[in-house]
Image 1: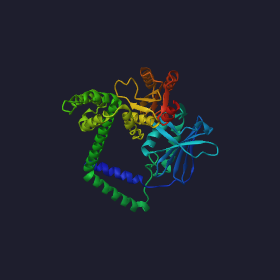
Image 2 (image 1 turned 120 degrees about the horizontal axis):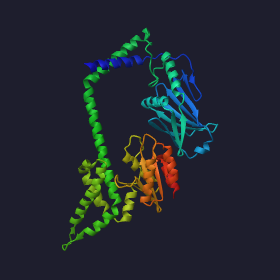
Image 3 (image 1 turned 45 degrees about the horizontal axis):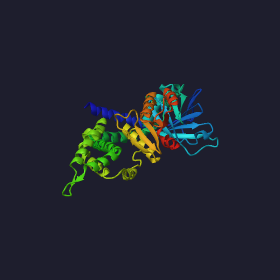
Length: 441
């Protein structure tokens, strides 16, 4: 019964928030030394912008569609000629802004990204709570002062409390307690209330079965995803040991005196390989329980790969060197490692993801024209520290590699950059990995 009253209460609150009083004028609401906020009543738009370190950071908040974060570089754009994205980090959030093709007559360069309502809500919280945000571009971290943002947003909210724009996203699209619904809108409100009550009744009757249905779909998708991930890990092990498997097969298969092939010892060797390499690799990623589901396919791949000599194996594997993954901040760390390896394979490198244990700090090992490159991949939501630099530098020594790099979707701390400069470790965003690798050969 308590839940029913809660549903009714939330529905009524939503319907009150859907009324639409209008703003009276377009004007600058607040400004200080760095930041300014303004309202455009005609386009139903809020704008918050500020300038620091040759960058203008502008947040456009629209009514009825996604907000837009834009960063403008004010100096000569030749500095950013080969740069197609920059990273903007604020509090717990990291955004990759794409370079826009259009450049103004003042030779300014624009980078943009759309923000969801949830992203905007967290953005505004960090925007008013933190002292600095950070722009990462061409491996440089540039601080942006957030001094005065709290007062800018506070005055903007005070203005909207008196003259609200309810269609704006949270936390700006809200009404003050003093606003009421006019009599002319009562019939509309009545229809909305009946519609909302119908939704509440529907949720009370069918909500639990629908939730159970979608939860079951989600569980099946996650199970299927884990099975595919387990198969990818097993296939990487097969590929890494393909030459040895070919030799073992050649040694252990023979014809008896009747002319029949005897494969008993070879099949025992296959089982030994699964026990010593495949299963430990799956166990490292807590995927060992999926082995029974992929066992037949794994054995089939082992037997197929071991039939061919090394030159033939290389041609077979090269057919699969296509990028199967697309970057997403929600991808797991192993898939991010695979994604980075695929980027290198696209550039003509022979790149392999290492196993989780015994890799000595190397996530990806890539070879091209006798040059070895060691990569450590960091899928982070915060700046990467100097521990990653230490580990990949140690891996470079262990594998006698020529180059080492840390690749991440996030920025890097000052200490990490200082250590990287002294150890000659490259600090990269994954979008610059291909161009960096191409410069080494």
